[in-house]
Length: 311
Image 1 (cartoon, rainbow, N blue to C red):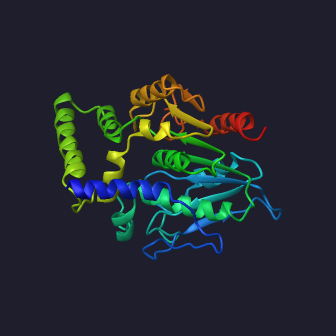
Image 2: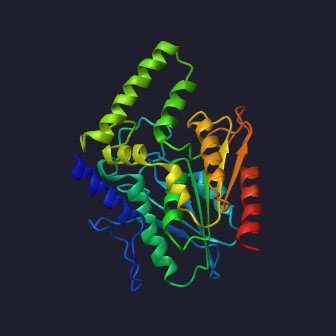
């Protein structure tokens, strides 16, 4: 087991911080020869020197069908081309589904999707696009799980001008899950039973080595990466401008943990990271009455980018 953990730790470093990628051609294949499916939407017929990279959350869906990303957050960096990348095994042929209980989630996705795989895919495409010398400004924006991926990319790539993470939770994913359970309003005895069960599951994932998992439409690789990631350690490695946003009414993550994470980074001297919490905002970037906060968030991000990057 120690040998496996050591090997996975080495893989973690190799995946997150690759050395160089040849710019001779845009190679859209992974080392296992599977294709990286990406979408590069050009602002207009003119050549843009700005690239906005949008990173979706943890759902089993094609990013092509995500209206919040493609119609709203795509406006964060005016005049920019917009890059999105599909998760392993997913294409635009997968219908949009928000139930979280779909039965048609691709087996390849279940087996291979993880924070590390997504980060590797984004780095491969970003690095090759950057080496074309077209993009002078590259901005990352990720929400939920995508926020963690954005942090991982920003921690490793010198090509990133700025990164924004939205509703990415606290230091450890386990605390996010437990906070979500607690917010469900179940009786205390039921919560303690659920907490005990999840804690045992998390411990098995971290200590037992690979085993078949199909939990919440995710496989072992996804669970291991999520449970083993320390966002405090990760974000300490981000050197460029970064904006961290969370809502005080977000029941999907550990809001107290997000606040503590921000405090620890501030106390650690990470002056390159800006932290903003929004009163009453939930995980869907809405107030609890359904009123959207997306326009305000986009406006605030644009103002921050104006100060940090585009001035």
